[in-house]
Length: 406
Image 1 (tube, rainbow, N blue to C red):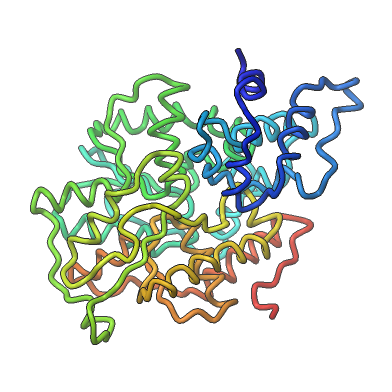
Image 2 (tube, rainbow, N blue to C red):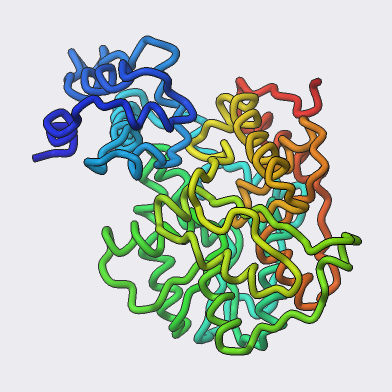
């Protein structure tokens, strides 16, 4: 039985998926998706129409997967949205938005940013090593503080590693999730072969999308990888448990707080609900002296609004969703928001500028690097916002969002 038939048979229309969904407000989205996915094109020149209700636009889905984990039958809405996006791509062709993270496209936003700002040059690029760090496009070209800070933590722990960075080593997962599967199918086996050629036993990824690609998507398409795949939080916790990563700086004093530092950890959707990593980042943070985590469990975790392509098509909606994280952190009396995804970090920072939030925003690796005693990693949040939005303006004909309006 295919998934559409299974969904129709087993969904009891209880509405739990809608009750937790940040985008769709009524069960009519299900009937619209059933209809669209069931129909065949009338002809090659007359494809099936997409759902006409603007409230059911398939581009509104963050792919946060909260509907799936809430559904008693493990069904939800997101899987139907993914099928609909794939069908739309086959019928209407690849959109400009779907090319934004296509390493083979000139419309790639990371390539565009790389033309303006030189990507990070990591040490030991291209060398053979037991441990390979895979920063991904964003940490190499856009949100560089993530990639640089991760390298600092690995250095502080005395890890001997090499790096595969830049657009040449894109994992293809962002385009894949947007319905453009071709890049991942082209580049996936090449990435695996290169990692194998270098003799890697462990691959460490920063981006949740990269992690999901190597941990879940690649094995399903290309077979067993032959090396262990760890997200940075998993590897950092292992290093802490082995006594290799220790923390020398009192972060409460560093941030000039008079009481113990309270952290709000933001769960990236593609790392948690899509890949099951909830506790390792929290355990790593709790190993830092004089800090506590305001939300020690992932219950009621909030999507940052960045994923699923929503940020590019509906930027204001996306940033309004990210502002909810600032609200939740402030309500828990937190001093700092910690993210574990470059996309989440950018969106949370950008929404903070719009909402004039008082809270600091750090990447997990950046915070741990500081706690190790390292000097701060250079970062310029306003430049990050400006570069990403300018790249979208260059790559998308209909994108004219100004993050500083209002």
